[in-house]
Image (cartoon, rainbow, N blue to C red; front, side):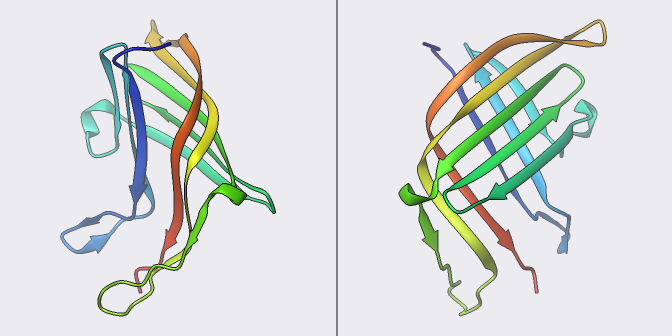
Length: 142
């Protein structure tokens, strides 16, 4: 059982001076009190992110790998669609810009956390995570 530990991955289509960027993710892990930061806007960390989302008849799945100059985090998360909400979100102005928006709190998966030592990644821990809050949706800026 980990103490003083939590992880979060989130993102979307951020805007800089009203110009939307491509899809971006932010990640953070507080592992036993030590912070790991995977924020793309912290350019000095040289954060790299790869992610995918798959949906089939029964489940939705996320795979995210993030690394910076000091560490890496890889997550594989699955949520059962039968326990999730399929949200039809309409903004206050009447526009509908989110498509295929899924929400749930039943995610399970594996998180692998690595420290970088002498240019190589060394596994810190492989964590089985449960009761993960999960959300996915595509945002249409038009």
